[in-house]
Image (cartoon, rainbow, N blue to C red; front, side, top):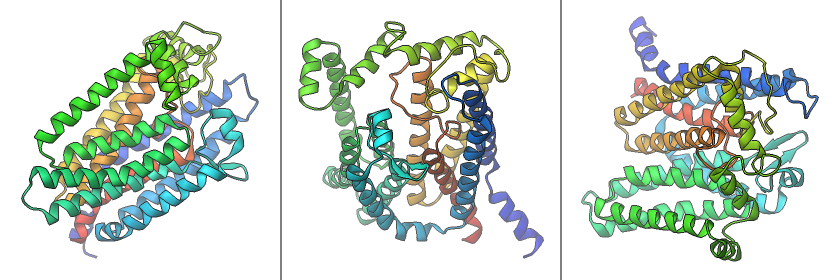
Length: 391
């Protein structure tokens, strides 16, 4: 390989995506150490958690490198099989879920293999993104002239991909993950080229249903109706009550969010310093890890982390617009929506802006399945630019 080709290939590696992900991973290891070391509820060696997460970072990095080298045409051919396998595995969870995790979280979304747990829904996010991208691209290629009828058919096809996933997630009692799948669907739906004559009424209906649901949740009769329909459970109403008033029950349902808000607020502008924790926050190593950043590194450190996410999202949007491959464009759209929703919901829940749904913070929260899913997404984003050297 001559020098010109090497330089060309090097230029195809998007360091604007790699650098923020790398820094976020470092922040994750530092924050996890603090969360484990300063947790009065357990006596776990913090280095054990850090080492285990480090292994997942290594696995994720290997996945990124491998995926970068997979041609888009191979991904296209494999997508139906990946999606189908994902549905089968998600279906198995209905029967063979981990009982201990169900008792702890109320969700049937984990398999257990010895001391390791796996959450298939996290990897299913990537499978659904790929399948939606394939369906939209195939539909648009077959119908060059867009009509309301063809757009309606496209919506039916997209729903056919999405509804089975949503049903399986609902059977697992994981409302937060279901919202992520809806966000992915919404992003691809808006970018699919469907006429605004359809999009505007659909958005209006979604807003109407959303406002109507909120109105029902805020009334006693409405709550009974939602419970009878099986759409909401008591713990979900408790989380909504906590969102409305994070300090209404600081020794009970709202303790987690109230403690997180106080921890972040106590960090002030510059934080209390590394490995300092004066406020106990439960599940701090995963769902509430942003409270570690806020308390230890203050407003400056928290803002830095948020800016890293903005840089990452911006670079991924650039890839979405720069790619000349429609299939890749829809994949990047789905990945952007997945990561963006995770960031917005997790940080929003930590500061009391949004209801708590148990969604991890990308690349920072403890958890191998979520991390691997995000790293696979980054690998797909990087491959879109890297594969240009092969074309």
